[in-house]
Length: 205
Image (cartoon, rainbow, N blue to C red; front, side, top):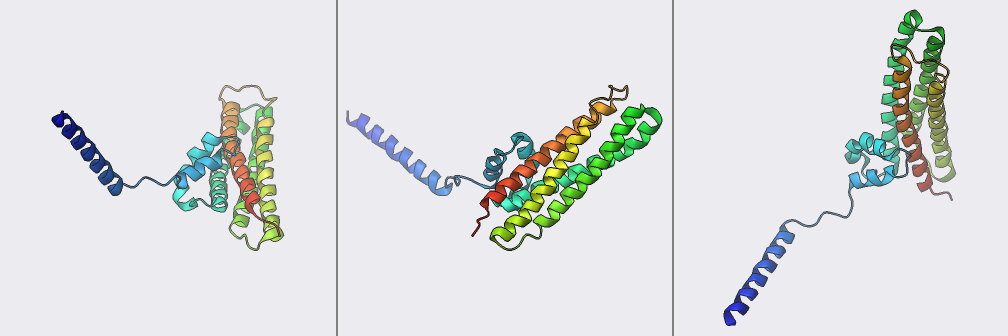
């Protein structure tokens, strides 16, 4: 009986000592971090997984700041919109010689719309980089960003709408452009949602 008690007591003391040393040497992680902030913020968007995938790599730069997150999201959108605009620009030459007139018209219209989208997103990024003041003054500046980003999103949606009456082509141009546009629309929509979330944090007097 004594041996049983001693063994149990020894096991208890050893386990307690181990847990104490382990806890002291490795403190528990904080309840949240920069990546958690991005994951939580992305839940407010229409495409949360796209949001997480495109923004998680910038967690150290964002540092749980909704304004920085919105700015990074706009910057990502600008990069992807510019890339698609360049891609469609190259397509305009191909469809002029090998595509149907309706397909060529849709591609050219899309290229023009993408150029407008790039302008709007670039203006949004510029405004986000020069925000100043407080209250109504700051909200007015953010509203400019919201307007430009909304217009860019509309341009992308209009681009894909222009292909609705275009028959599927042998080269797959229609499906390719629309597929790429959908991906750019997702990051643009997410960026706008994050700008809206940031606007909600601005207090008015």
